[in-house]
Image 1 (cartoon, one colour):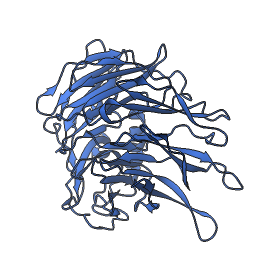
Image 2 (cartoon, one colour):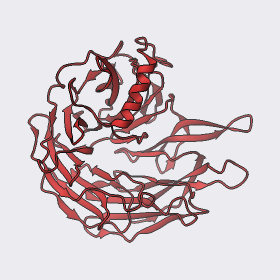
Image 3 (tube, rainbow, N blue to C red):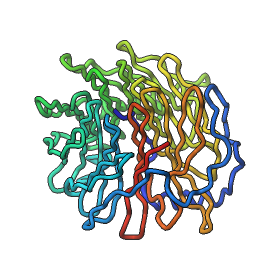
Image 4 (cartoon, rainbow, N blue to C red):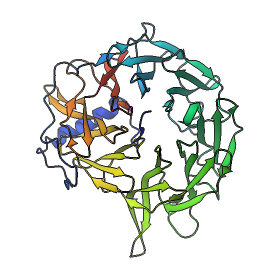
Length: 466
């Protein structure tokens, strides 16, 4: 089972990287080891100095996917790793959706055509990503996307077997996998309107999809500014949902109160719990019945105003714990939580700001002490032992200017950070968009990224991470 991953930035493609490269060129090369705010808390050891010199070939084991000759363009890849350590990769071509298995030991399987490419019917009706890929602890892999002609397409594969069709859900939105092949879909219908509704559908392999349920409705139960909700299914099958409820009174009308709701199999919905003001957070479940909620929050200040911060709450023994500030800050953020409940969060500051979470122990600052002109934390993974891995794009100086390259590093509580390693190669093809990362319980991690070849060709590459 791969760790849960959430990346808060949404920029995609080469255009975003070009903008950041221009900013990097203007900034110049920062001094090594001068990451702002690197407090060096427990575990903040390991990598030091500048990023490594760009290699002329990709990291060992990296390989390009066998794109079908009829559709030699790959974009928006998604990846999960099954219990066998094999990565299932799904990407969008210009003609179709495609899938392939990537084995770190033997490479890629032939590409399989899954169906017509994704297309939003209405971007306000379906704010979730075009292509979604989920896996549960049993290895059930679910791919879902929306097409204009016939609504949602849902496919499933188990242990590398052929993809099979699943029934389309009665409502759309963000998919999440639960135990033993179960699913839930949560979405906002008609956002930015007084008729906005939070709608939930649940899937059981034995009984199929439940009827769509309206969990909250604007203007009193749901903020009309909400465009999506967050959800996670715990190991016991309990569905947690998080959304925003509007604030009443003379406060900032753009704020909302965060609301948590649980669906317990056999018992139904438990009733909403209101917590602090703040933006939508992310939910992560562990194997011990715990759930970590992480996101922006607004808390009352002594002067009567409010303080904005990144904070978390941990759910255990049937109740939410106190709000705890995450000791970092930055403009971009990515985080993951493993099955043991250990979490790692990374953000951009003037360096790579990071924090490490353990249930019962809270957060500690563990900055990655490497400075470069510009970089983006892309994806984070955490294995069953609590070891984290981070993959990001950094702009390395080359003869033609600052060129985006892909790097990775690992963090362990007892040894700190490993030195950063460059994953991709120098040459004509370049990192074209933000890569995606997946890992399983034993620490096997694979990163997948599009590589631009020319205007009509973009390869899909994958590499095992050291």
